[in-house]
Amino acid sequence: MTTAEGPTAAKSGSAATDKFKSERVTADTSPERLAAIAKDALDALNEVILKHEVSYPEYRVFKQWLIDVGEGGEWPLFLDVFVEHSVEEVLARSRKGTKGSIEGPYYVPGAPELPARCTMPMREEDEKATPLVFSGQVTDLDGNGLGGAEIELWHADEQGYYSQFAPHLPEWNLRGTIITDAEGRYEITTIQPAPYKIPTDGPTGRFIEAQNGHPWRPAHLHLLVSHPGKASITTQLYFKGGEWVDDDVASATKPDLILDPHKGEDGRNRVVYNFALDPED
Ligand code: BEZ
Ligand code: FE
Image (cartoon, rainbow, N blue to C red; front, side, top):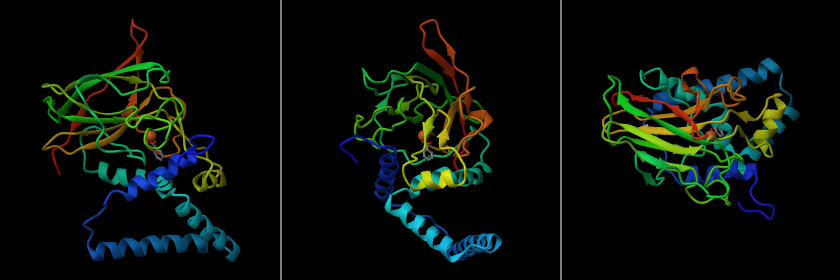
């Protein structure tokens, strides 16, 4: 991952493949359901070819691009930008509590545990963004506080790099597992992240350019909130008035997920956000 010039955005994207491959993923899909999904996916692709009268040279360029995405390790990146939001939309149909959003390719389980009032692991010198104090409560759907809930929080630094996907960052920089107090409350000090640019120096970038798109995601915090006996929620929080909030390349924003921080007397931005967890599925 390291180069003489240091980290690159594309190397962050491709590092996501190594992380993904280290997990064992399974799904209890029946053979009948798998066959139906596979057939419809192929039918949809063939429909596009017929509709646009795709030529042999175009077909070969498509094949080469697919090979490039795989060799560049960018399938997690590409799929999480352009496809994951639909999978999340399906999950959201069965949920009544806090709205979810995509996980993206940069989640890592096992971040250090932190108490309910805490500061995220960060570099003393280099985390130069505006401090953000983010507080609230985790409850069930009836508003009962959930003590001992886990809030996994991860986000990019001011340059858009996630720890463990860029070699210059400490292992758990801006990643933590916060344990709520007996009433389900928490107060986390972190930094306000900047908008995030999807790597443009690889095949995903070429795809974005080809469809005249832009590579930006609005500034965001990632969260995975869980408690025994409740359905966990993976979500993201954005910032009111922030660039790209209304035009996210990953189509992952929702009106309920917009924070509106206000500057406190100490110069730090402060915001409250509460999470309500559905019962376990
Ligand atoms: C994210 O950081 O949220 C993200 C990055 C790449 C693809 C999708 C999401
Ligand atoms: Fe992100």
